[in-house]
Length: 492
Image 1: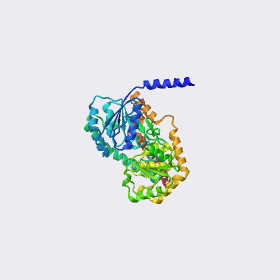
Image 2 (image 1 turned 90 degrees about the vertical axis):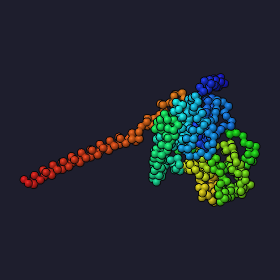
Image 3 (image 1 turned 60 degrees about the horizontal axis):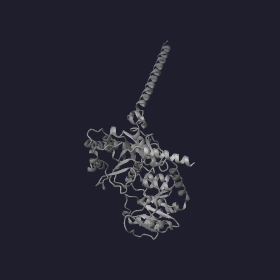
Image 4 (image 1 turned 120 degrees about the vertical axis):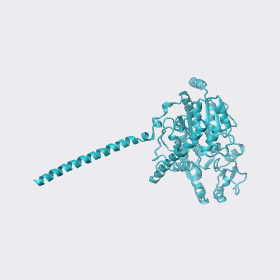
């Protein structure tokens, strides 16, 4: 047994040591910390696998990975950048990026975040490298058409609509209208603006009608345990949960706080983009009142030094190690804004949630969690003490919520390969196979009329109409002939 184990380890070490060190460029320009967390996790994972990674983002890694090589190209001055077109242009024209582009440096693959920054696909053209897209939202309308992935609006809801897969007529109508409007906006307004950015900076580069469909691989921050089951073409890979790290020991004060919470702990965080101190006094009281009456302790991520009306069972801090808190055995509930990272982490650790969705995809994430039976969603603008108290009572005392999230957690953990290992493998696969063109489906190259079989349908309709017209003509001819014959008989 020992010799077999040693042999397997030896083979593994030989394989790892023989793995080629590749140069990888990762572009994650969004100023949102949650997006950076995902990009940074991917960059660290690839560096720790032995690769030479360059990360373009508005943030800087304070503790670079020990293995491989890791370098930041920091987009300084991006703190307030939000507009997609402006952010895209400023990224390309940033002095630090320009210095990189004008150097003689080459890369084996380029990984670009897909989030209202399509012109950044030109980096892959510039470096003549395969292009990998990272979708922080999972499969959606922004990425499906890039690789010819089918997404029928009959059962695939838009990422910003809080619908399930089994939609009624009104929901399917709204979803279809939303899909059509989004496509028109993308092709008539957004893509032309992004193409101008490309022309201004890379005059010889093709536009998005070419660059958009040069995608070798799509890495998706999704998994069936948290997302709807939807179609995936071969070059779409689910790696949802790859950013979740093994739990570390909590700081002493937090560890004692949670260890001594015999009735359990509730963790409350609205993420990194929302300042909880900005909520109205009535909202704050509507939440604090019910929390203060609980026997559980509460950790609230609060952005100021004091919390007006703070009950004795509530501990505040401007930062908490969220993943480590959710991993603690005494955690009973997570009050969240419904961000995808928080949703992934709560499922990973098996913790029920009370959601106050506010922005972007949060309503969809919270709706999915509620459909899956481990979450209650409340409208933040219409919150009352009664609603909060009722939701807390159900989530803390009805075992079905914890049972449902534990079931989802088992699904997330029951995978043949760890998601980070999957991300590393497929990135290396694309490099080894020069873009892996064999994974692309033919649909990505078809014009819309061929993809939808409009020419075939038109031909069939034309044939049917022709057949009907000929049939009517023949019937009329026969009827006329019989009438003429009858008239002759009457005359005789």
